[in-house]
Length: 336
Image 1 (cartoon, rainbow, N blue to C red):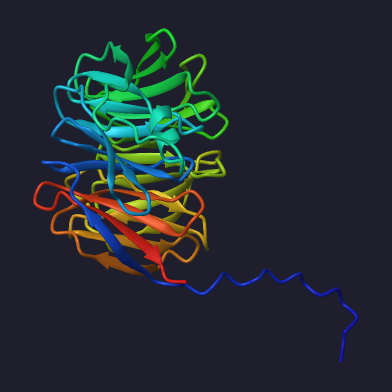
Image 2 (image 1 turned 180 degrees about the vertical axis):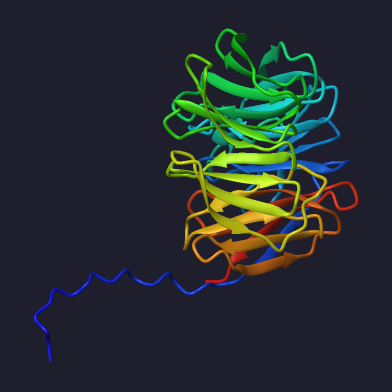
């Protein structure tokens, strides 16, 4: 019998987990893959390597559509502009490069001529860092601003149009492992080997908050969640944490993977259920339930540390890249 009390609105249960399986593998580089990134439009995957090259692959077949040459040392990170027209790369040669991807995208249209796979697509070289550039991120609100972080312990903000560094922030006491804009472009999170994770005002360069202030372990990766409410922080003690940066409270801890040595790039997956995805030094990709914190799946196939993962913006696909004893880019698709 009804008590007459108002019924609590019940949340719909999350969709049942459907496992991912590997559908493709490719070896676009001669050395370790250091970074994989789906374009914002979802049609391309950009990959970077210690061999100094950047490759653009079909996101469905992993066929190499173009290879971008210009860096004189290994490339550590990549970032797409929100419109997918430009790509930024960060390199041990102390520079960032901006690449014009428009001809490549145009060539994907059915009636279009194929683009020259080896044409020089570099339109800017950003110089100013005095040591390796390890991380780069386009401001999501504009394709004319990029943030970078490097082994010179600075965060730099660049005007892509002029190629000038418009702000240098002495951000950390040890090398910076990651820089990432929040979705409205107003603030930046940085992580460092010095064990801290900090929030910066993108316009003024002032430090708004120190989210983590430990000497150890090193912060190996940090990024804002897609909704801008949380920060995902990786530390070199086999842990990933989800933090509410407004309160500074850690809400979730994800573990089970191995991460003691490398700066492994993780990702949020929000196309079907909400997952945290990360590579691991046991040569696997781990998928956790964001809310429940439990490992949903461990993807095996790589033969070296999986250093980078990326999730397709609209489809249930994951790309992953492996270090020198593997060198593959692998595509994993959720079974329908």
